Length: 342
Image (cartoon, rainbow, N blue to C red; front, side, top):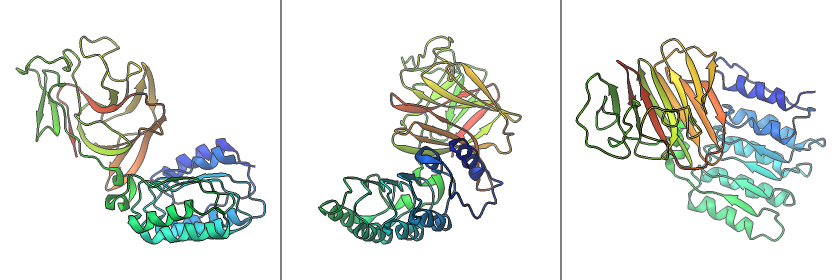
């Protein structure tokens, strides 16, 4: 009789680099919608959809919301899910397939399923996919169908880049903002690398510059979903911060992670720790790589850090929050340390 708490553990296990799970049967458990929602971003593939489709067709199915976003289900996975959606036993009301590598081909399966079972699904999220004009048209035609209960459809943020596997489908190109860099930080490689030095640099005065803290912000903000990778040397902090963070002095209001304006992952060769609002969280994950990936879903309030080694992503830490302002990537650099945007 598994519950929401079980799903938390399961979600973490599925994201582990050591996960070898190939088959998962969650039948006859009180997971509820909140538990199933945790299956988002769990490295599920098309094969996972066969079991989910079977569950949707069960006469005991009470599932009303299913969020499979950020799993590379592809068109083949959507086809399998559609078999479940067709069933008269399926009473699913909300289905989120955002960022699932769905293309124009996959667009035909769901409208067909809704023709067979039109009375329940009212919200469908297919954003961050590559549906094409003809694929989008199929869904808008279904919205006009008076027999279909679907009334909320999301198909924005599409494009060919969305059929890239993993979180790299959300990759963004970032550069560092020279006007924010502390005078003991040198920017190089077209403002893609920052290095701490002992000597003050002759930077012009600027109200955005961190005058004491050895910190720098990026020029571009993170909006929607964004993913970037960094190569770290020495002791550094990888942060996300509001632009309104204080720049003058070295009080908590200026330091990444010591206030409500910023979130920060401390990285060294020996350990990781996370801090926000001056609350430190020691992390049990041991550093195995100098490359760190960062994923932000601004509207969902998700911030996740990953260790990248030989093209394998291992979750370091994830937090769920509410972003109330536009957020910017930032870095704190210790002595004899550097960060490079990859």
